[in-house]
Amino acid sequence: MGVADPPRGYRPDAPAPGDLIDWPADFGTRFTVFVDTEEEFDWGAPLARDSHGVSAIAALPDAHRRFADRGAPLTYMVDYPIATDARAIDILRATLADGVSAVGTQLHPWVNPPFDEALTPANSYAGNLPEALEAAKIDALTDAITAAFGARPVAYRAGRYGIGPNTLRLLAARGYRLDSSMRARYEYAADGGPDFAGVGNQAFRVGPMIELPLTTVYTGAARAGATSLYRMLGAVPKGRGAFARAGLLSRVALTPEDMPVKDALEAIAVAVGEGLRLLNFAFHSPSVAPGFTPYVRDGADLVRFHAWWDAVLTDLARRGVRAASLEEIITAAQGCSPGGRLI
Image 1 (tube, rainbow, N blue to C red):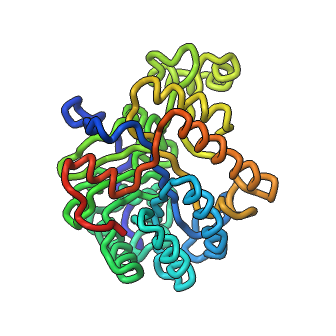
Image 2 (cartoon, rainbow, N blue to C red):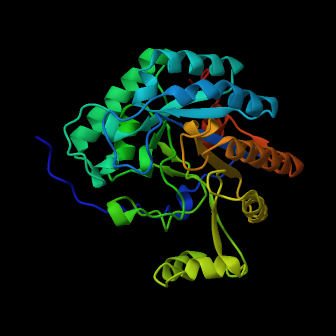
């Protein structure tokens, strides 16, 4: 029998100024790429325990090579179906041979045991689950990744950005050092998810944990005070679209998925100009092959996906924004010497 649905609507506090990470001067301005490394499924269908596959992982080595050729290490945030599939494990192990890429954890609760919750939209956000059940799922996934790759992961992302009030404490108790579950300036309250509208792009500390939000930039002439304005426009029919078309206000996440490259380049210019020291990019691993996500439906979309990255990586290089590995980020944030390679 499934457990009762828990309270909804977790809204983390904005960090206090003293909790913001002050990157060392020699860190410079950097970027990182986190890959939501997951099973493929029908994005238009209700979530299911068993309606998925892992065949798209076969395209990952080619995508990895493209980033490696540009000097950009990747952090693969692995979920349970990937961490327990022998072929996927072998492919990911090969990518780690570059010595700078890493494997972290991504929790999709609907395909991650134990399955003691009802399969509902709200319960697809792991942070909504009772604390003991969220902990048990984190443990099952952490153990699976440790068995697959030979070391415990230290970076975490909740699938669907579904962090909750207990998550960071549970992670810290298990030796995790960095979380990247918060998607700056987004909210998912409509079906029970968290609200990050008040969370900005700067990395910050929550106790012993580093929180590295996914970067989202407001662009346009009206971007001053954009958080409240963007929320208000959401209540006006087609208000956000009208402001975006007029060049007044757009919300741009640093991802090739449904974000035009022109907008991404403008967002990078704004972020760097405003002094953001670490830009956090992301995409879903099934997007490296046609037909597995709404963002890469066919070969033409895949060409555009790679062209997006070519343009973005070229622009970052022109600006002197260098790639940062997971180990470099944790080391710089904690002000300590590297303690060996992170998986």
